[in-house]
Image (cartoon, rainbow, N blue to C red; front, top):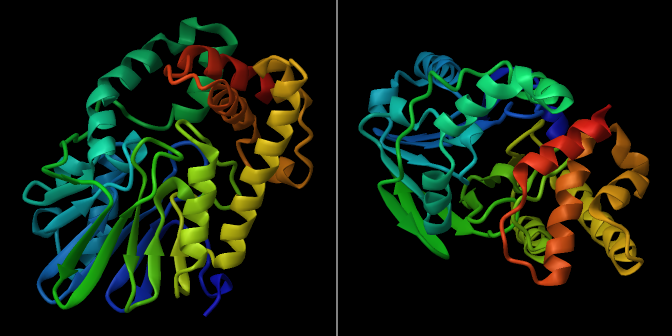
Length: 317
């Protein structure tokens, strides 16, 4: 079965074996994917969505397909800390919520209230504010259902959902501090979270880039036929290789400009995107270059988020 077997349409897609993918085109900022695994009377939800309204609609569709409501979900796994994968956790009131230890720490540091405050201020922030409204204006950060992880792990964690083995594999820091893959070895399915953006530009908040490239290698070594990315259409190993090639290309191009003494801003403007220019959200190169520059310097301080969104707005214009 190839990735062409699935259409990229909004809603629930049956992967077989009691597994589903929830897709949200166009896969851009905030339009994330999720998944559901059911065996017998046990269930696992891979990620929730950016606000309560979107998550409730997803859970309603999953209930129509399986008879399981949000209150029936036994386990939620958050693949990483970003709100578009966590802000509906609270609609699964009785679930054990599992995340990597690093992700749980990140979730506590950046909550929906901060996003709501930022968006409230956006109309007064000029071009940067317009950019924020363009990318996040469809989401309601005043109406979320946040719920922190109740169980954390590092490395790998094996679960059973009914008779189905599920392996949680920590591959971060990469996209974020604590990225996790959800692998169903017997069913040849993997949910990757934001280790994969398909037909969209990956964004490297954490790095190092070598960890992200290695995470792609880990997926490529799996015997899988359905690969559900964090954003974009269901893919195959060719899609994984494209993401990996982008990461290697940006690393190579950023390193040249770093060694030539260019600033992050100048490098982000200067790097030719070529085939990658057709991927949505190409302005994320600003974040990727900044993260790579900090890696090259050995700088472990957090990124200047305000400055990076300003630079992305500039590149988008």
